[in-house]
Length: 70
Image 1: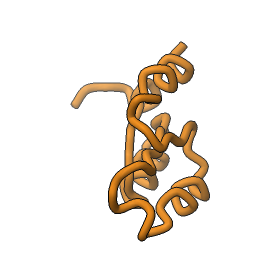
Image 2: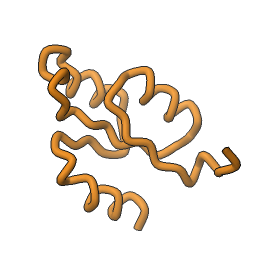
Image 3: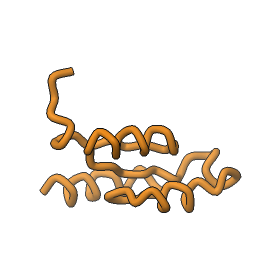
Image 4: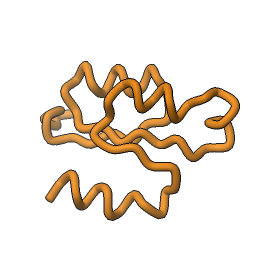
């Protein structure tokens, strides 16, 4: 797509997506607030992947993006 991955930010709610973003050297925000998250223990799974940030509510996204992109 022509963008430098090191200046990209990925918001992801899946293990595969988080692993791909991290492999591509992109900053990551893990989202664990979806309706599927609780049953899959998704918060703990995503947190174990060491995202740059983890949110449970999309209302928190603007401030987290601002913190990560300064």
